[in-house]
Length: 118
Image: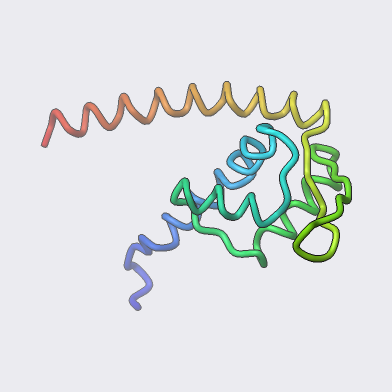
């Protein structure tokens, strides 16, 4: 690939990566959920993520105090970690919701201008 070629796939991946924390916090805010359910909900929302990406992200969110977990017995095998938002996580999610709303409004204005011009 030439050095001055635009890397569309990289930009698309960065856009997805930039919203992954937010998406996961939204899912966890619905109630206690284990990693497999998080992945299923992300896939249902057409956000593709693999376990190798999810587990380090959940560990980071726990380390910074936004989520916590508890172990629960499973009928289908070993106990599972069920994640939930902490008070700090709820506050951060509210801030992210506000930021997303402002950002979404701004981007939609630009899209409308683009669509009018094309």
